[in-house]
Amino acid sequence: MSENRGVWVFSEKHDLALEMLGKGREIADKLQTELAAVLIGHGVQKKADELIRYGAGKVYFVDNPALKHFQIEAYLSVLYNLAVNYKPEIILIGSTRNGKPLAARLATRLEAGCVPDCAKLSVDKHGRLVGERITYGGNAAAKITFKTKPQIATIPARAFEKPESKDSSGQLIKLDVKVEESKTEVVETKPLETSSVRIEDADVIISCGRGLGKKEDKALLDELATVLCGQVGCSRPLAEDRKWFTEWVGLSGHKVKPKLYIACGISGVIQHVAGIRDAKVIVAINKDEQAPIFEVADYGVVGNLYEILPALKEAIKKQLG
Ligand SMILES: Cc1cc2nc3c(=O)[nH]c(=O)nc-3n(C[C@H](O)[C@H](O)[C@H](O)COP(=O)(O)OP(=O)(O)OC[C@H]3O[C@@H](n4cnc5c(N)ncnc54)[C@H](O)[C@@H]3O)c2cc1C
Image 1 (cartoon, helix red, strand yellow):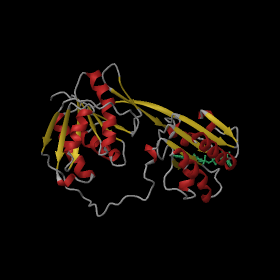
Image 2 (spheres, protein in one colour):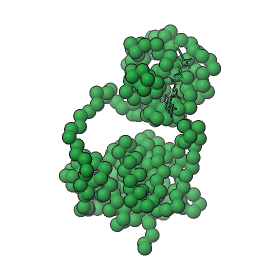
Image 3 (spheres, protein in one colour):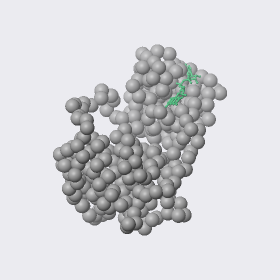
Image 4 (spheres, protein in one colour):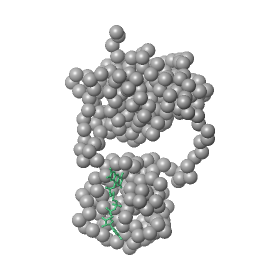
């Protein structure tokens, strides 16, 4: 049987695929092998050029009307067929709601290992991929390597920087692959009524926790968010228990990577902090000076958020003129 060769990148989220190409290139160079992207969909050929400009030496492109929307059986059958035919050494899959189950099923079909949610990737001295992920409720980081090939890892958005786009050339390989019929049918898709920017993409996030007394007081955060062109987030209890929000930040919620994260009335236990570790600057506002959030904050304000937030908003407004 021929040896597995090459690093592959796939995500149904195009931006995430581009981000993974940067790390993919680094690993491929270390292993002295090729970097390829897999593009699955219908009428999306122009994305192939972009994948090449961001570093893919090859793009395996499967175009089929049955692949217009993500359907796990259909996408899985394509990826499985390609992997069996071309035998990549490593497959990096975007850690999205669709990508994670896809990676797990692909690994099962290929009888291969899968490491989900790798925030770091490296290659050990035996040339094996090593994935690093947060585990034990955010209390530890585990390094995991593989005993089988292909080595499959899923990568969350913003784990790695998107590489520079270059005027490079690559090979576009169009393939006709038998698509497995889906056992479910998409009846309708409609956008969620949420803010226009997804919280994972926001540069500035102002988050509230149980320190916020009532739902209406969220206006305080909205006002500061408007001044700073940011988004409002929250800790899990505000979404899960109080139902004031639909999504939250943290280990079981969104992992965010903003330039500025302002935590207001959030204690900062490990499950929340696990989602904000990659923020560039963390500011904490909490009336309890012993609150653990101060251990991870770059700047801390000990005080009542109901006094600090309006004052902060006015000061920033003045500063911005
Ligand atoms: C498996 C698991 C997964 C979890 N995942 C997540 C997750 O993804 N994200 C998450 O957030 N949590 C998660 N949790 C919950 C987590 O353990 C905490 O319960 C939660 O983060 C606490 O939220 P909080 O900081 O808003 O509330 P609290 O811990 O109650 O803290 C409120 C803080 O507000 C301060 N405060 C009160 N009033 C004011 C005021 N007027 N001005 C200023 N400060 C004030 C208090 O001093 C306190 O520090 C998870 C838990 C488990 C078991």
